[in-house]
Length: 53
Image 1 (spheres, rainbow, N blue to C red):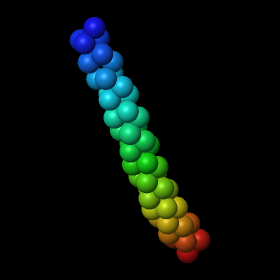
Image 2: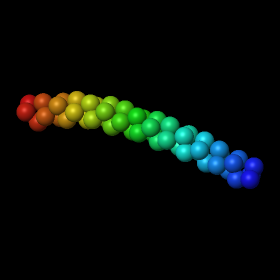
Image 3: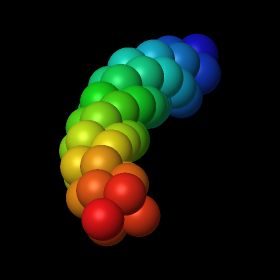
């Protein structure tokens, strides 16, 4: 009985940490995508200016 309780506690802890990890990973990916999009937009603007000239 005690071992089952311990396993239950461990799985609860694992679920909690995995949820936090997924949230952090999601935020990290969003930040990278946002900065990359801004950078790409900026470089494409410069590229368009070069094409016009």
